Image 1 (tube, each protein chain N blue to C red):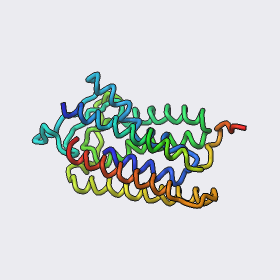
Image 2 (image 1 turned 90 degrees about the vertical axis):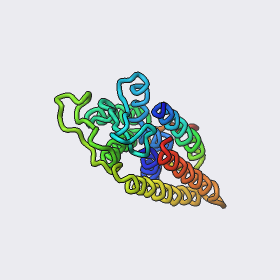
Image 3 (image 1 turned 135 degrees about the vertical axis):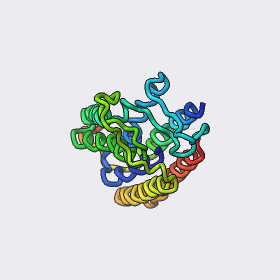
Image 4 (image 1 turned 30 degrees about the vertical axis):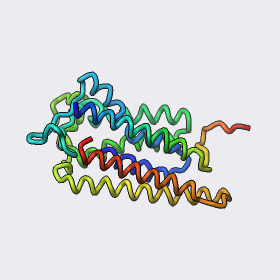
Length: 196
Length: 40
């Protein structure tokens, strides 16, 4: 899941207008940002499910992100992000951003097959978590699409209101931004569905 | 190879969302975050 996380961040912006959008967008993907260098180093991996490729289709990967996507690892990553953000923008905004970082784990829990460990490195060999919605790609894609469309709509509503309240004669720049956000979300989801 | 392509797509997407949308959004008159220094 990529686009759905961005949609959720847009939704949060509509509720928490003081938090900069860029920091929310970065927060919602921060776990994957940390994942990328570990992936490049071969510490974390993606392997196709049995009969799932290569090339891998949408959601056809078992993601061995045993540090970044473990429950405890996600909480630590979220807390670190929230601490830095809170130092810059205050405790409340830091807490919001930490929650958005952790929302990545919650949404991934919905779609991942049972490949998300509880402790980093799957210490203790505890049961791995994941509700496996990726087994039904159409349902997972529908959840992502809903997040993209609903998040963008709420963002657009909040953005046009804030522009109107500032006394600007036109809300067109807020609308243009929302359209760009929607197109970006749809393109991201489309590329993801195409396995790119 | 596909995994590398996925990682690159992710990075490009992140740049669009964080940098492009972030910069455009920052131009809207949102309230400032508490704790942010207000320029005089």
